[in-house]
Length: 310
Image 1 (spheres, one colour):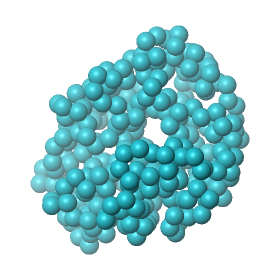
Image 2: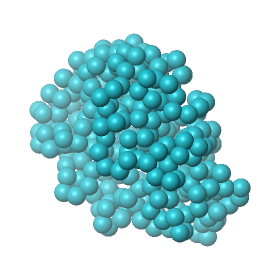
Image 3: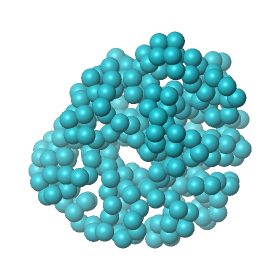
Image 4: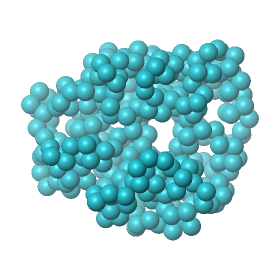
Protein backbone atom coordinates (compact mmCIF):
# COMPACT_ATOMS: atom_id res chain seq x y z
CA UNK A 1 0.00 0.00 0.00
CA UNK A 2 1.38 3.39 -1.00
CA UNK A 3 1.76 5.66 2.04
CA UNK A 4 0.83 8.93 0.39
CA UNK A 5 0.86 11.38 -2.47
CA UNK A 6 2.97 14.53 -2.86
CA UNK A 7 1.00 17.79 -2.94
CA UNK A 8 2.81 20.30 -5.15
CA UNK A 9 1.29 23.74 -5.67
CA UNK A 10 3.27 25.20 -8.60
CA UNK A 11 0.07 26.04 -10.46
CA UNK A 12 -2.51 28.84 -10.70
CA UNK A 13 -5.63 26.70 -11.03
CA UNK A 14 -5.66 24.27 -8.09
CA UNK A 15 -8.54 23.69 -5.67
CA UNK A 16 -8.45 25.21 -2.18
CA UNK A 17 -6.31 23.45 0.42
CA UNK A 18 -9.43 22.36 2.32
CA UNK A 19 -10.85 20.82 -0.88
CA UNK A 20 -7.53 19.06 -1.46
CA UNK A 21 -7.50 17.55 2.03
CA UNK A 22 -11.10 16.40 1.47
CA UNK A 23 -10.02 14.77 -1.83
CA UNK A 24 -7.15 12.92 -0.09
CA UNK A 25 -9.54 11.62 2.56
CA UNK A 26 -12.24 10.63 0.05
CA UNK A 27 -9.68 8.56 -1.89
CA UNK A 28 -8.26 6.92 1.24
CA UNK A 29 -4.85 8.58 0.79
CA UNK A 30 -3.31 8.58 4.26
CA UNK A 31 -0.07 10.51 3.68
CA UNK A 32 1.00 13.79 2.10
CA UNK A 33 4.28 15.51 1.32
CA UNK A 34 4.37 19.29 1.03
CA UNK A 35 7.39 21.20 -0.25
CA UNK A 36 7.36 24.12 2.18
CA UNK A 37 5.36 24.90 5.36
CA UNK A 38 2.29 26.01 3.39
CA UNK A 39 0.06 27.68 6.00
CA UNK A 40 -3.14 27.05 4.01
CA UNK A 41 -2.35 23.34 3.77
CA UNK A 42 -1.26 23.06 7.40
CA UNK A 43 -4.46 24.72 8.63
CA UNK A 44 -6.60 22.47 6.41
CA UNK A 45 -4.75 19.36 7.61
CA UNK A 46 -5.48 19.99 11.29
CA UNK A 47 -7.37 17.02 12.70
CA UNK A 48 -7.34 15.18 9.36
CA UNK A 49 -5.18 12.28 10.57
CA UNK A 50 -3.13 12.50 7.38
CA UNK A 51 0.56 11.67 7.93
CA UNK A 52 2.81 14.51 6.80
CA UNK A 53 6.23 15.04 5.31
CA UNK A 54 7.09 18.75 5.48
CA UNK A 55 10.04 20.13 3.50
CA UNK A 56 11.80 23.17 4.93
CA UNK A 57 12.27 24.53 1.38
CA UNK A 58 15.73 24.59 -0.21
CA UNK A 59 15.82 28.38 0.16
CA UNK A 60 15.93 27.93 3.96
CA UNK A 61 19.03 25.71 4.09
CA UNK A 62 21.54 28.51 4.67
CA UNK A 63 19.39 30.10 7.36
CA UNK A 64 18.88 26.82 9.24
CA UNK A 65 22.53 25.79 8.95
CA UNK A 66 23.73 29.17 10.24
CA UNK A 67 22.49 28.93 13.82
CA UNK A 68 20.50 26.96 16.37
CA UNK A 69 18.47 30.11 17.06
CA UNK A 70 17.34 30.29 13.43
CA UNK A 71 16.26 26.65 13.55
CA UNK A 72 14.38 27.22 16.81
CA UNK A 73 12.54 30.18 15.25
CA UNK A 74 11.69 28.09 12.17
CA UNK A 75 10.28 25.27 14.31
CA UNK A 76 8.26 27.74 16.38
CA UNK A 77 6.76 29.49 13.33
CA UNK A 78 6.18 26.47 11.09
CA UNK A 79 5.66 23.46 13.35
CA UNK A 80 4.61 24.57 16.84
CA UNK A 81 2.24 27.21 15.41
CA UNK A 82 -0.06 24.53 13.98
CA UNK A 83 -2.10 22.13 16.09
CA UNK A 84 -3.71 18.80 15.24
CA UNK A 85 -1.07 17.65 12.72
CA UNK A 86 0.55 14.21 12.38
CA UNK A 87 4.08 15.08 11.22
CA UNK A 88 6.30 12.09 10.46
CA UNK A 89 9.31 13.68 8.77
CA UNK A 90 10.87 17.06 8.17
CA UNK A 91 12.89 17.16 4.96
CA UNK A 92 15.98 19.39 5.14
CA UNK A 93 16.74 19.89 1.45
CA UNK A 94 15.25 18.24 -1.63
CA UNK A 95 17.74 16.97 -4.25
CA UNK A 96 20.34 19.54 -3.15
CA UNK A 97 23.53 19.56 -5.23
CA UNK A 98 26.73 21.60 -5.55
CA UNK A 99 28.12 23.69 -2.71
CA UNK A 100 24.71 23.94 -1.00
CA UNK A 101 24.92 20.22 -0.21
CA UNK A 102 27.38 21.09 2.57
CA UNK A 103 24.57 22.98 4.34
CA UNK A 104 22.35 19.91 4.74
CA UNK A 105 24.03 18.26 7.72
CA UNK A 106 24.43 21.36 9.95
CA UNK A 107 20.85 22.37 9.13
CA UNK A 108 19.57 18.87 10.00
CA UNK A 109 21.42 18.95 13.32
CA UNK A 110 20.01 22.36 14.22
CA UNK A 111 16.43 21.39 13.31
CA UNK A 112 16.74 18.13 15.27
CA UNK A 113 17.95 20.01 18.34
CA UNK A 114 15.18 22.59 18.00
CA UNK A 115 12.51 19.87 17.83
CA UNK A 116 13.97 18.01 20.82
CA UNK A 117 14.11 21.20 22.87
CA UNK A 118 10.34 21.69 22.56
CA UNK A 119 9.38 18.05 23.09
CA UNK A 120 8.90 17.19 19.41
CA UNK A 121 11.81 14.77 19.09
CA UNK A 122 9.48 12.09 17.72
CA UNK A 123 9.48 13.90 14.37
CA UNK A 124 12.30 12.44 12.28
CA UNK A 125 14.58 14.84 10.40
CA UNK A 126 16.04 13.73 7.08
CA UNK A 127 16.90 14.96 3.58
CA UNK A 128 15.58 13.87 0.18
CA UNK A 129 18.02 12.67 -2.49
CA UNK A 130 17.73 11.44 -6.06
CA UNK A 131 19.42 8.45 -7.67
CA UNK A 132 22.25 10.63 -9.01
CA UNK A 133 23.91 10.56 -5.57
CA UNK A 134 24.68 6.88 -6.14
CA UNK A 135 26.92 5.01 -8.55
CA UNK A 136 27.60 1.36 -9.23
CA UNK A 137 25.98 -1.61 -10.97
CA UNK A 138 24.55 -4.16 -10.24
CA UNK A 139 22.61 -2.95 -7.15
CA UNK A 140 24.88 -4.69 -4.64
CA UNK A 141 27.79 -2.53 -5.88
CA UNK A 142 25.98 0.73 -5.05
CA UNK A 143 28.00 3.48 -3.38
CA UNK A 144 27.58 7.22 -2.92
CA UNK A 145 29.21 8.68 -6.01
CA UNK A 146 32.38 10.75 -5.76
CA UNK A 147 30.90 13.39 -8.07
CA UNK A 148 27.26 13.81 -6.98
CA UNK A 149 27.16 12.13 -3.58
CA UNK A 150 30.40 12.94 -1.75
CA UNK A 151 28.38 14.83 0.91
CA UNK A 152 26.27 11.76 1.69
CA UNK A 153 28.36 9.44 3.95
CA UNK A 154 28.36 11.83 6.95
CA UNK A 155 24.62 12.45 6.44
CA UNK A 156 23.99 8.69 6.28
CA UNK A 157 25.95 8.13 9.49
CA UNK A 158 24.03 10.93 11.20
CA UNK A 159 20.71 9.35 10.15
CA UNK A 160 21.93 6.07 11.64
CA UNK A 161 22.62 7.87 14.93
CA UNK A 162 19.12 9.44 15.07
CA UNK A 163 17.14 6.46 13.77
CA UNK A 164 15.72 8.49 10.88
CA UNK A 165 15.29 7.06 7.36
CA UNK A 166 16.83 8.47 4.22
CA UNK A 167 14.21 9.94 1.90
CA UNK A 168 14.84 8.95 -1.72
CA UNK A 169 13.14 10.21 -4.89
CA UNK A 170 13.08 7.10 -7.11
CA UNK A 171 12.15 7.60 -10.78
CA UNK A 172 12.52 4.67 -13.19
CA UNK A 173 11.07 7.06 -15.81
CA UNK A 174 14.16 9.31 -15.73
CA UNK A 175 16.57 6.36 -15.67
CA UNK A 176 14.78 4.89 -18.69
CA UNK A 177 14.71 8.21 -20.57
CA UNK A 178 18.43 8.61 -19.90
CA UNK A 179 19.36 5.22 -21.38
CA UNK A 180 16.69 3.75 -23.66
CA UNK A 181 19.38 1.66 -25.36
CA UNK A 182 20.14 -0.45 -22.29
CA UNK A 183 16.94 -0.10 -20.22
CA UNK A 184 13.75 -1.80 -21.36
CA UNK A 185 10.40 -0.05 -21.02
CA UNK A 186 8.75 -3.10 -19.44
CA UNK A 187 11.55 -3.20 -16.83
CA UNK A 188 10.76 0.44 -15.96
CA UNK A 189 6.97 -0.10 -15.88
CA UNK A 190 6.93 -3.24 -13.65
CA UNK A 191 5.61 -5.30 -16.59
CA UNK A 192 8.65 -7.43 -17.44
CA UNK A 193 7.54 -11.09 -17.45
CA UNK A 194 10.73 -12.45 -15.89
CA UNK A 195 14.12 -11.49 -14.43
CA UNK A 196 15.82 -8.72 -16.39
CA UNK A 197 18.92 -8.11 -14.23
CA UNK A 198 20.73 -10.82 -12.29
CA UNK A 199 23.03 -9.37 -9.62
CA UNK A 200 25.97 -11.75 -9.86
CA UNK A 201 27.44 -10.43 -6.59
CA UNK A 202 24.40 -10.86 -4.34
CA UNK A 203 22.68 -13.58 -6.38
CA UNK A 204 19.45 -11.53 -6.35
CA UNK A 205 17.19 -11.17 -9.39
CA UNK A 206 15.52 -7.96 -10.51
CA UNK A 207 12.32 -7.90 -12.51
CA UNK A 208 11.78 -4.14 -12.22
CA UNK A 209 13.96 -1.03 -12.19
CA UNK A 210 12.32 0.49 -9.10
CA UNK A 211 13.67 -2.33 -6.91
CA UNK A 212 17.11 -2.04 -8.49
CA UNK A 213 17.27 1.72 -7.81
CA UNK A 214 16.11 1.33 -4.20
CA UNK A 215 18.56 -1.52 -3.53
CA UNK A 216 21.41 0.49 -5.06
CA UNK A 217 20.60 3.20 -2.50
CA UNK A 218 20.56 0.58 0.30
CA UNK A 219 23.98 -0.68 -0.83
CA UNK A 220 25.29 2.90 -0.81
CA UNK A 221 24.09 3.33 2.77
CA UNK A 222 25.85 0.08 3.72
CA UNK A 223 29.06 1.22 2.00
CA UNK A 224 28.91 4.43 4.07
CA UNK A 225 28.68 2.45 7.31
CA UNK A 226 24.98 3.23 7.71
CA UNK A 227 23.35 -0.10 6.89
CA UNK A 228 20.79 0.35 9.67
CA UNK A 229 19.20 3.33 7.90
CA UNK A 230 15.89 2.61 6.21
CA UNK A 231 14.62 4.21 3.01
CA UNK A 232 11.34 6.05 2.52
CA UNK A 233 10.54 6.65 -1.15
CA UNK A 234 9.60 10.32 -0.92
CA UNK A 235 8.70 10.65 -4.62
CA UNK A 236 8.02 8.27 -7.50
CA UNK A 237 5.84 8.71 -10.53
CA UNK A 238 5.49 8.80 -14.31
CA UNK A 239 4.32 11.71 -16.49
CA UNK A 240 1.23 11.35 -18.66
CA UNK A 241 2.14 13.83 -21.43
CA UNK A 242 5.08 15.74 -22.86
CA UNK A 243 7.12 13.06 -24.64
CA UNK A 244 6.41 9.82 -26.54
CA UNK A 245 6.87 7.59 -23.46
CA UNK A 246 4.85 9.95 -21.25
CA UNK A 247 1.36 8.67 -22.01
CA UNK A 248 -1.67 8.26 -19.78
CA UNK A 249 -1.38 4.51 -20.40
CA UNK A 250 2.23 4.33 -19.20
CA UNK A 251 1.55 6.65 -16.26
CA UNK A 252 -1.43 4.57 -15.17
CA UNK A 253 0.52 1.33 -15.61
CA UNK A 254 3.51 2.59 -13.62
CA UNK A 255 1.60 4.17 -10.74
CA UNK A 256 -0.89 1.32 -10.36
CA UNK A 257 1.91 -1.24 -10.40
CA UNK A 258 3.86 0.89 -7.92
CA UNK A 259 0.87 0.94 -5.55
CA UNK A 260 0.45 -2.82 -5.91
CA UNK A 261 4.19 -3.53 -5.53
CA UNK A 262 5.49 -1.54 -2.58
CA UNK A 263 3.87 -3.76 0.03
CA UNK A 264 6.33 -6.50 -0.97
CA UNK A 265 9.63 -4.64 -0.59
CA UNK A 266 12.76 -5.24 -2.65
CA UNK A 267 14.97 -8.31 -3.12
CA UNK A 268 17.46 -6.81 -0.66
CA UNK A 269 14.86 -5.63 1.88
CA UNK A 270 11.56 -7.52 1.74
CA UNK A 271 8.65 -5.87 3.56
CA UNK A 272 6.64 -2.71 2.98
CA UNK A 273 8.38 0.32 1.46
CA UNK A 274 6.80 3.57 2.64
CA UNK A 275 6.23 5.37 -0.67
CA UNK A 276 4.80 8.71 -1.82
CA UNK A 277 3.58 9.13 -5.39
CA UNK A 278 4.46 12.31 -7.24
CA UNK A 279 2.08 14.05 -7.60
CA UNK A 280 -1.50 14.81 -6.69
CA UNK A 281 -2.10 17.38 -9.46
CA UNK A 282 -0.76 18.43 -12.83
CA UNK A 283 1.08 21.70 -12.09
CA UNK A 284 0.82 24.16 -14.98
CA UNK A 285 3.40 26.66 -13.71
CA UNK A 286 6.30 24.23 -13.34
CA UNK A 287 9.33 25.15 -15.41
CA UNK A 288 11.60 22.88 -17.43
CA UNK A 289 10.50 20.09 -19.74
CA UNK A 290 6.84 19.76 -20.71
CA UNK A 291 6.65 16.45 -18.83
CA UNK A 292 7.22 18.32 -15.53
CA UNK A 293 3.69 19.74 -15.82
CA UNK A 294 2.06 16.32 -16.25
CA UNK A 295 2.88 14.13 -13.23
CA UNK A 296 -0.54 14.55 -11.61
CA UNK A 297 -2.91 11.76 -10.65
CA UNK A 298 -5.67 14.38 -10.76
CA UNK A 299 -6.58 17.37 -12.90
CA UNK A 300 -7.07 20.77 -11.21
CA UNK A 301 -10.87 20.22 -11.28
CA UNK A 302 -10.28 17.13 -9.06
CA UNK A 303 -11.19 14.68 -11.84
CA UNK A 304 -8.76 11.74 -12.23
CA UNK A 305 -6.08 12.17 -14.91
CA UNK A 306 -6.60 8.40 -15.42
CA UNK A 307 -8.21 5.65 -13.32
CA UNK A 308 -6.18 4.51 -10.30
CA UNK A 309 -6.96 2.27 -7.29
CA UNK A 310 -5.39 3.23 -3.98
